[in-house]
Length: 509
Ligand code: FAD
Image (cartoon, rainbow, N blue to C red; front, side, top):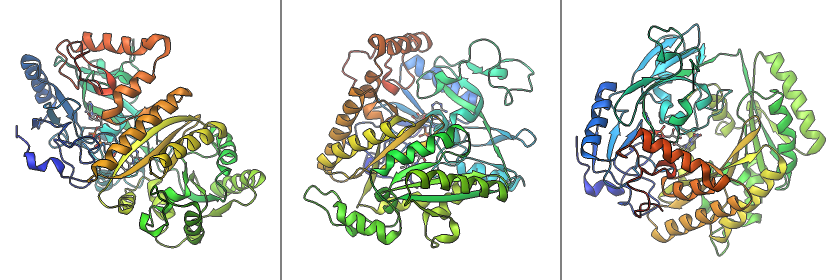
């Protein structure tokens, strides 16, 4: 074990991710801080650490890599917890089953290392991974937080297959077919026999996952990416109405996205390139000028079509027709239509499972930039998307932030991820961001809109918005917590679930 140096509490960024705290701190930097970091080398070590924590009643906080930036980074919720940094030594790709396109990994396998591993064993062209915006995160950690990427396997949790878990009292279990001695189907059939437990280990504090199976995407024989730009802010409604049937009927096969033109522009420009109003918000005229210069629109849509060229061309032509019927002045771009630095080229890499670091360009928007994500779920329809965008924009501008929203589009619902970019050295700005996001959570809940994932500091508030039948779900979660973790040592407070000894003792925020 090592004790982190106090002076380092303010440090870190995406490339130099600290293990003791959140480098994108939104509270006081020393609020969510670990007292020590421990590096287990295998499942047995994890089990030993858990038993030690039970003996001394010390809270522990597992990380796979700790790059959960925008949602709490590597910070533990309870100050003084011991961080179990699984990623440092448990970082192997344990198996790749090429015929069945599936692999078995440890927590420290990053997207970029899985990609490199597949290349190194000569199957990188046949088996693709799904990368999120940035490839430095853990394939396991991201799936356990139910993160999203861009290919047809963009719902990461949906493509995991089989877990090994150390329970909060130190026993080791395997789920699905892994629970049967000698089964060869652990990574082939996810359910096994009896209750299916896997879901309770996501966004929870019920176990530490030490191995996970993950499906790999077989090369579909071609990818065609395109961007569509919609000129008017109000086009969002019609755009989503066009996209929904294309998703449900699987004409578009990946997780496409619609994002605000200004959010797109923040990859190429800094806030200083725009004229700001007295609140610090980009003036609409100034935004319009830059969007025209960049050849984009008020909203832009990025999507990928998979299969041989003639198949994707037929789909592309059909999709264009659908948009032209409802938004006649939509502009379409393929890779050959855009300059070399255009994001569409990076998008082509994402959607082919090739890591890129392009998203970090956004960090130049303001000095000392940090992200805080507000991430409500939206129905896949124009009405919900429109009201959420309007709600986000109104509230954020009131607090002097630009609404920078993206809809990641699933088959029937969308993750509406809104980025608060704030200067992490500006205490007043941090306070404003936190107050604003708290107001947004309340605004959203008042119309039945809930977050799919949230920052550590906001998990109590968000969990309370899931309040059907007098908060029956939290009562159930607490029952499970008390049964599985009687000493309350594992990640107290994660997702608003507090062990019995902590409840009502002033830990909630
Ligand atoms: P970790 O930080 O290791 O873990 C995430 C959570 O799971 C933590 O709460 C941790 O306690 C818990 N956990 C981890 N491992 C275990 C385990 N083995 N057992 C039990 N619990 C565990 N996210 C996306 O999903 N998609 C994106 O496209 C995306 N883009 C981003 C862009 C930017 C600019 C930034 C700043 C962030 C982005 N994120 C995105 C958010 C985040 O960076 C990623 O989700 C990242 O993969 C999460 O960090 P990690 O993988 O290192 O997981």
